[in-house]
Image (cartoon, rainbow, N blue to C red; front, side, top):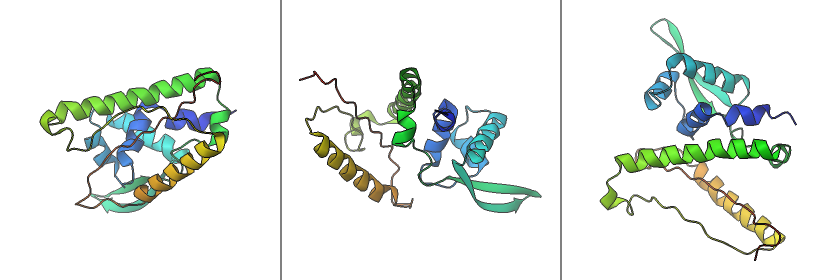
Length: 180
């Protein structure tokens, strides 16, 4: 399979950029402020790659000091790999992409706990847990559909001054057929 899309969105810097954009529209300048460790030239190169790959779209253009300033957003549905795209990846590719994903989660969590008032951590809404569940294939499919419907509802909510930004990550790992 041509894993060009996976390489495109599961690059560490581009994954961070897309996460920062998550449901928002931002200019390169705003992205640069949010991601100060990414050099400006590198940021523009990644924006171009995501734009050329159909992952980002220009949602606004305006003249600022004689130059055109573009505002970008993630194209709805483009920031995810389809089941067909996932099925085309080798085991090594899955491990490589998952490692990038896991490092992004660790980086985000580290940034949160560095800045958090640890006495208020429960009231912040932060949590992490793992649960083992037992489902038939039909029950798992229905569960996944229900979760995606719930996530779809909250993804459609637009940023407002009274809404706090949260990062939601999900991992479902089937255990081996012989696991009990």
